Length: 54
Image (cartoon, rainbow, N blue to C red):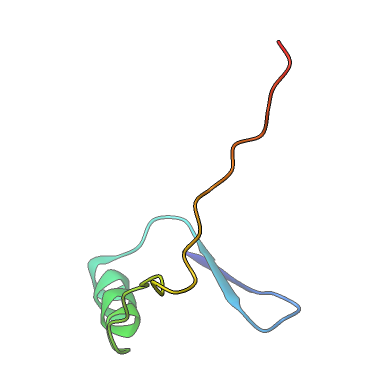
């Protein structure tokens, strides 16, 4: 697997992962708190569709 560092400091992984690398990756992405995006009822507005000319 090739690893590249972006100008912002992020890491890009390319190529097949070994089972060991896959276990490290899944452990890292699952380490943070679980967040669920919820829309606030007071801020939800109906979506307006644009008129299209066919």
